[in-house]
Every structure is written in structure tokens, then in C-alpha cells.
Image (cartoon, rainbow, N blue to C red; front, top):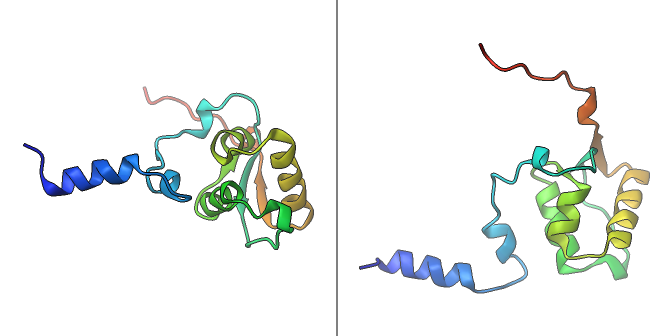
Length: 114
């Protein structure tokens, strides 16, 4: 028999809202698993967006970017926006220095413990 909490959690997981994807975001979503799109972006400050970019998908993406770094592939997968729009957003964020751009190829490769 399931508990009331389990039932409510299951119900809430199935319902959709503009922020439901963020609530149930899989933290194991590893950046290394995303092929290509090597640069990683982390929001430094909240941008002043043009009206056309003020969508739930973009706001969700920016919210996640304010707490953890993401790459372009992740943004495409989770924002629900076309590649051209994501690329425009990234160009705008980089030009206005509103994101920190991290190149993971500059980090030394970790060696496995013997």
C-alpha cells in the first residue's frame, strides 16, 4: 500500500507546469555525457531579455544556469527552443558578459586511482 506522500509525489510528478521540469531535474545529467558542444556556460547575472526571448523555456534554462553550469547541448535538450534561438541567446549572454564561459579542454585529464 502506498503512503499519502508517495501518492502526492507521483501525482505532482505527472502534472505539468512551467517549472515542473526543474523540480524533477535529474542531477545525474552529466555534462560529460553530452557529445559535442564543449563549452560550458554559467550565468553570472540575470539578463535583461527582449520580449521575444521571455519564454518559459528560456526562463527555466536561465534558472538552472544560475545554479550550475550547462553546455549548449543541454540547453537545446531542456529549453524546448530551436537551435537558432539558443545560439542567439548564448551570443547575447556572452557579448553582455552575463555568463561565465568555461572551456573544459583546458583542465588536466583526471587519472584513475591505481
